[in-house]
Length: 249
Image (cartoon, rainbow, N blue to C red):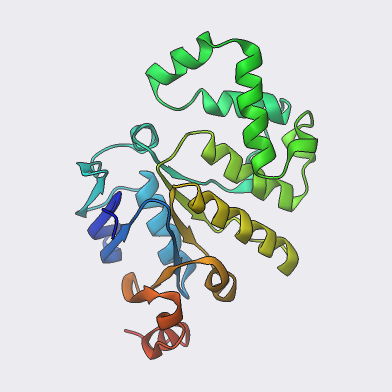
């Protein structure tokens, strides 16, 4: 078994006086796809925001590649390699897709940004085009992101995240608003990202969809992990079923 690249130990956060996450613990290994599912969107949003550094945790520890990042803000977490996707509907820069990707790549780490700017323009553009092709938008590289359809914007959300060179990628419900065929396309893309060596945590509403591609899954209910394990085991878990029926406490 590979050494976990991300350890989430006893993570808790609050919304005012009320706790929204209670002792959440997960471990992610490089090159694996782990799903995080659950009946409550508030719980899943709280976890995504806390991992991204957009919401402070009041207890617990985050270790990325063995180094504590619990006290780091959003930008520093990205620079260390923990990236959380953002809502595809909000990502509508005016420049062409290829140019927007180059800009995203420059947002890695400060020393990388200076190095990136010194590279020949042709090399920067080719690297960006390769990434755009990987997510399936190669033919649209010279179009503006605002012209993309919902599936295209979901692909673009993943491209922007990958441009930051993550070692851990949290995919936060990028399939919302897509039909079944489009969701299947995104699932295949997320699986390919994990196969490339990145540790992927996919926060998702569609349980059947993640069951097709994830190796393991965890169920978040009432702010707690109530079940988890290999997909084939979790599929028969009465605790997981109870959580979705509103019976877990």
